[in-house]
Image 1 (cartoon, one colour):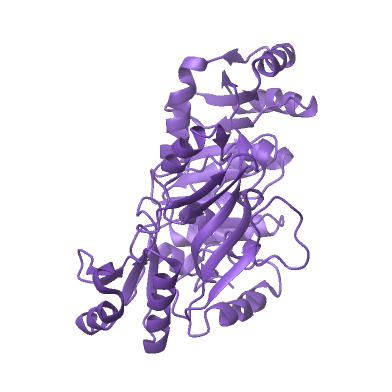
Image 2: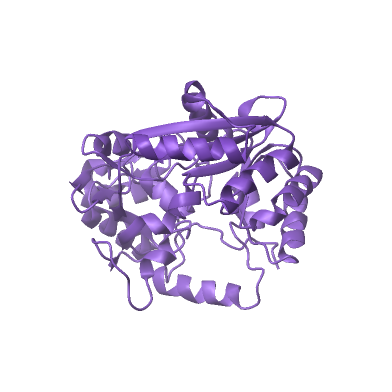
Length: 402
């Protein structure tokens, strides 16, 4: 079977088709048209597809007949610094993009776990934001438009290439956080920000509750920070929790906010020497342990949620979005414990997303489940539109999630 798939694809895509170490055919298209050809052929023959980015985030273990990787979709098409817009292919690594943007004095204000090696397509497909979401919002807020190839090889362009409001239903939002269930992202138009002239990290360590209240004092005072986040001992390899606050902007603006922060939360201290270490810890900590998950909780519930996850799943590695809410945990847990934890959060109407996990867990638990009545039916109908033959391997609800 593998040899037949390899020959059929190679006849149309040439050296874009290889074999991975396990002998599974792997397609690495370098253009949207080549990606559409690969998915069209797979759809015609009913071949199941595993989608891969740079191979640094999701385990490459989903059962499939072939792999489609975006590694050769690695071109930065354009950077319009005056308009603060960039167009890039989905295989471009976050770190590579950041370097190119810096040369134009521009910045993509996304700091997801797993950066800088992760591809932009991986970040979009899994919708994994970082601490900068406090000021700049979720992953969707950075995306103006996408080009996506559906499971049957159609090319769908949604959204736009300028910063403006979108009228009607925005298909781009369906793809962000869709885990590849509704197609493969080929390229994306991104909203940029001006590169800050100054950045300063403030930190404090101690027990969870007092640090949480210190962070909330800054939020209530509307401190102009990019990040107000709590990190568990597992993230920083310290004995205590750490509150991090990042200020960014003009030199004068950062100085002014530093003075305000010092008055409101005296426990905070400027830690410019810790900036690189904290950034690296946030990038790498959530790759440790088999599972990474996030919950969309409101800020007041975060300390109780941290206690609950530690009790039900173990301490692991945690980050709490003191300002905008949100919670991330990484570690190891069994399927029954994950399902029970999801059910306990659903009773509070808190959605839980499995961001990263081995296939047996993803297939059993599902990436986001359907804790509201009717969500599962809607998802099934949407998948039938964008992947009519169900060839894209993306377990959204899981086999055991009712």
